[in-house]
Amino acid sequence: MEAKTIALKPVLSEKAYALSQVRNTYVFKVPQGTNKHSVARAVEAQFEVSVEAVNITNIAGKAKRTIRKSGRSVNGRQSDIRKAYVTLKQGDSLPIFAALEEETEKAEKTQAAVDKAADKAAKKADKKTKKDGEDK
Image (cartoon, rainbow, N blue to C red):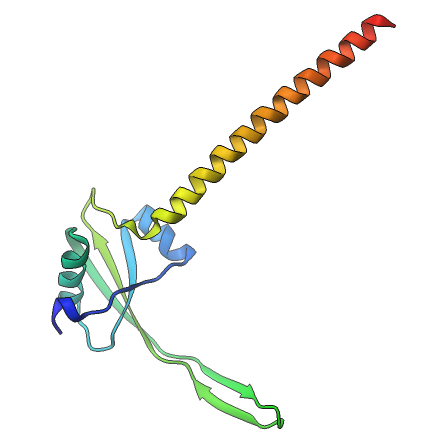
């Protein structure tokens, strides 16, 4: 397969996010016929980064059973999945989880502002109770 025709679909899970943070490894769903070399070329072409290593795994689809309205059960199977674990060279990164990181930063800033306001209110309440205690 040619590098430009490979559809790379990033896996957005907690495990994939942890891999990207700790090992600089990103996970993609790739078509069944792809190999490591074509995945590496596709990632380098699409994201303009340097690929250090690619590992590929095949995950068999699970057997599923659904029950129809008539009470009859139908057996089926989920599709097989092929995942590529792409490790980038040190210093390179992909913007896949950028939105998640921005959201985390925003939440931390909001929490800091709330904590600051709570501390201010607590100090004000302490002053008032001390003042009331001195008056009596």
